[in-house]
Length: 423
Image (cartoon, rainbow, N blue to C red):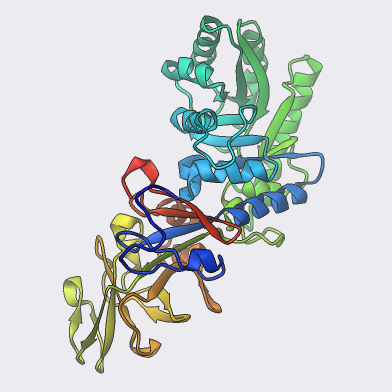
């Protein structure tokens, strides 16, 4: 347990049903809003996805953006315990943090130093020395990157491992397939540089009508790999599949798949059901319950008014915590296992719930914003649909001031506020 967060301080209870009796007694020292992260579920999701890939492909767990809001260090450790040999991040800073957590032992059970960490989009030439120092695998797409990494590796007597990114149809990062042969010849002659991977990214693998476009990308990659093999330039590692690609397209080229959102319990809707479950529950508590009269205005702009007397409860969570303002008057929370509607606009730090139909609720009772309570569940996908966005944005947007409470085997094992803020 993090110092300063005792098991039973004064305050309001935040109890996660289904995590276990010990965790159910957990209480935050301050504001009751918290995101409970079930590390066992994360590990189980990794194992299920890896099994679905089959024995001939390896799985990289994507832990960028603080593991989609779940906490990168803790999630990485959960994936490693589940058998991960690869992790993937977006930026050099994220990769460095994982390496420091391994060396410093700040992650429960440690993060073995031999774990490969792939930096997928944030390696600029000026960061080359840091890539080499942290022993990261770098995705590259320019000669300037290759040259800088070569020089940095030579300066510290190391080898820089790189993965060349091909734009096979995404229209984002990567070189064209026609440039690959020349690029790999030049990179292969650079001292201290080892091209270990060839990769591409899928643009429409998660869409109902995305099959033809995805297969067209596969055709581009397959043609290029044959050309590179004939020229003795094909790197040993090939990877194209993302979360959707790995589940929806068993024929995706490559022996490595990079899965992100699916490992957090939000697989693409078209994918086969392999039992992936959400690992985060976002919850808070009622800090005031009050009677309101018919027609009484609630919140900014007075956009919610009951046609009859009722009861309103205030919950300390708002758009500063990543709970979107677009959910104003159009979402539910769970109180006593029942859905209750948001009453009025989402404020920066608070929302109001109409608890009239929830019974004689009282201050201190739990409110679940995302996750399960009783037989009911509010999903990331539901909130995304109500705000016309995607589950990725809702999940990764849970704010840094919301403490993450990490649970294993029914016990709270740690609490951390992301970004180093005090809890």
